[in-house]
Image 1 (cartoon, rainbow, N blue to C red):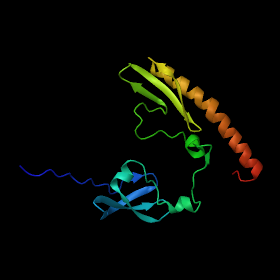
Image 2: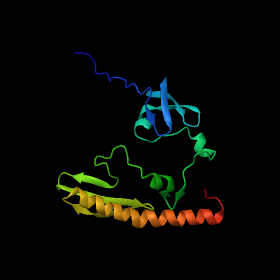
Image 3: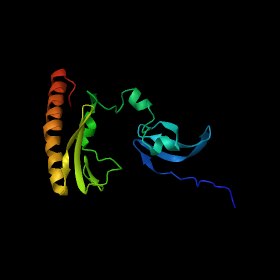
Image 4: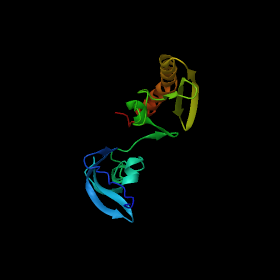
Amino acid sequence: MEPYSRKKLDLTGQRFGKLTVIGPAENIRDRTAWTCRCDCGAVTVVRTGHLRNGHVTSCGECTATGVESLTYVEGTCVEMIQAKTVRRNNTSGVSGVDWRPSKGTWRASICFKGKRYHLGSYRVFEDAVRVRRRAEEELHGNFLKEFAEREKAAGTGS
């Protein structure tokens, strides 16, 4: 019987946040690593696990120097709300709506300012989506409007 060995993944060409894998790199300790190019042009080496779990999504230099940095207000990322980002692991196609097989229902929730709000469970998918959209309008809509007004008053708005 042959000893167990894991097949090495080839991540070349794949994107992880702002990073594009350009090829394998020398291992970091005993972990596989990859050479990546950031959208800002910098090249960095990142372990496979950190790429795949989303722990590292940029070179770190572009955000440290303020280039394309994200804006957080009270724990909420303004750019993510504006872009209406749907996470990669989302299975329903709608942010904040997921299927609960043990209950046979769709659950609606929303995170805002560091808190998760449970909006209820619904047998009909469209009902969960409608509740989630209403919460987005109420929480995110006012938040983005107030943020834009503050930015304009401070003279930093676009």
